[in-house]
Image (tube, rainbow, N blue to C red; front, side, top):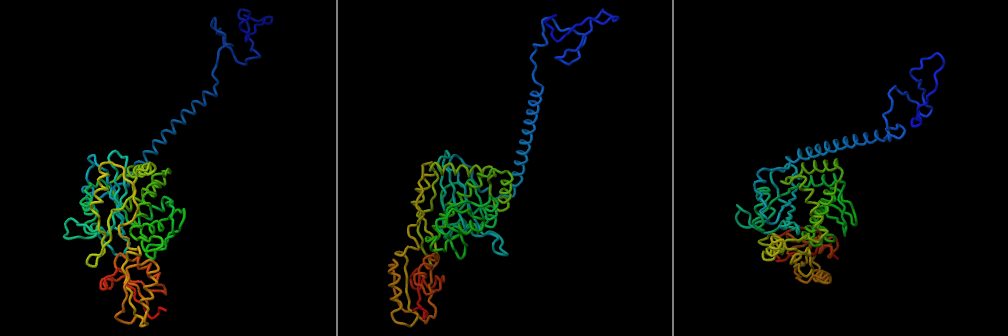
Length: 462
């Protein structure tokens, strides 16, 4: 009996039945014990018991984890369905049919920006303002972001003669733009993205802005203003950046600098969108994109494409380039003449997956370099020696191709006329002349004097 220390047997009081012993509760364990005796060899005092509280918390933890898993799966499914529901807004069946499947060559995406809808009453297709070609080499280890100048002189399928490449979109929408780019480059266009500028601003504002470093403040009378330094650009500032070409201080090379800013911004914007982690913000971005973009890409493809470009950029495998060529006026129309041999050599590297190095964003002949610009200085003030004096002032500023003469009539106001494509040069020359000179574009005047810029001195000049 000494093994059962929880049990105490005492002699029954007088007069009680003694056939069964009376069992009293132990002071150590306050529990009612039935008449069943412990099994031989089993000591209840030595039995190991699992704490009930620990078992209960384990059960709660498993149930909570299961509920959380169900919630995550449900939210993921809802998020996926919500994204897929927005994608049909971005589809144009006719355009998708114009795209080519990738058969092992470079994966090429045509990116276009348009100003459609900004002018009241505007209908139909308009000229494209931005045209970029994103091509990823076979194997996905190299990529290039190539700017195609909107004034590039090309042949547009179905139209006789030559025209500017941005007219292709106006003539036949994205389908004709895709075909024109394929004829120019020899690359199959596998994907396309077309975005209007009003939607562009909404997307930038939805992601909370795009961070960039702006080396020089932009103050463009047509595009807008952009502050210098490390700034988070809002929608209006981002649009001003990608369109600015009239500020001679911030974008002295006009379209060449504008194309460079466009490429830099596209990189920054794709990175910003690709790194959004808040699913509700992602849905807002998707809503803004679907309302202003036409593309064959899914949202998932766009997000992964942004991350892919960032990884290639960090690895030094993303080249940013401009189509090589030079500016030229043909029959009074400003064109960008593509250097076909250089362009073909550039594209052949992408086709074979060879690493391409980013090049300086300059043209063969800048329209703002003082030694290049042809200037005619005319005296319209009636005061002798004025044309010679202004010519000498401009010579000291680096201009070399100057001639002088007399205007055909009297001018009260000093006026600077510039030809198509020489607006930045005209602004710089007007600033160099000073005295509040007026600035006007007039290709007829510049053509008459066989010059790029014509300066007419008025009687207000002293």
